[in-house]
Length: 279
Image 1 (spheres, rainbow, N blue to C red):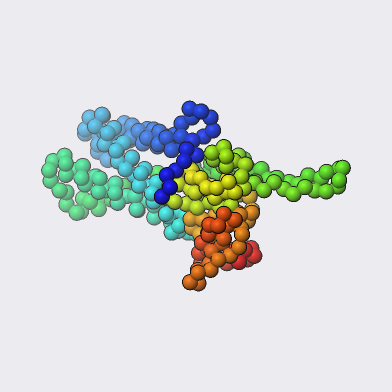
Image 2 (cartoon, rainbow, N blue to C red; image 1 turned 120 degrees about the vertical axis):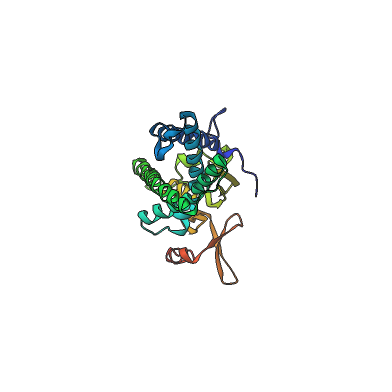
């Protein structure tokens, strides 16, 4: 995979890269929750010293936090996109509870050299699921509140020119400043043709070439809402202004971009793409 550029850095010299700020924020959240759980002495951990409780809970929460970072996009954006939030939250909680429970088993084994009985494993798994459901639901609620509180994205409206009586064409790039500011300077004024997900990064296809940023596809689509386009695949979003044609191979449909790249069209999104007249 092409090495990501410095596009993950916000504008301004000396600024902390987005991934660095996200890492610091994640560590701070894990430590904060670890301190709270340690102070409360949750699940009979009050029997050990406070510093040990802090390490114990911070480590487990960090394990769960890292697991959720991998599981959340899969459940919310791929596997269960149309499911009720309650089922999505339950699925995430069950999945991230597995590595946490394994961590608990290993901690117990390393502490006294004996492996707990399987019955104890299931009891701990149940406890972990309860905590995971609460934390996942809280994270989901905060994410929804954040999206609702976000100001509406600006839309460019053609203005009437008194001298000519002609309405000029709207600007091609209607992406929000929040999105374009993530891009290197040479790409900020370019037409955005498509966005494709690669691991934790996004490849941005533009009229000036391609670049990569650290971002979730779902967040990018939200910030590109004012630009006419649609999702064509679980890992692709295409702007109408980037279309150059249609390509088919072995019965598989794809949209050809002006750059020559091809954006796949999956069966999940094929109907919407056809209804839009793109195929």
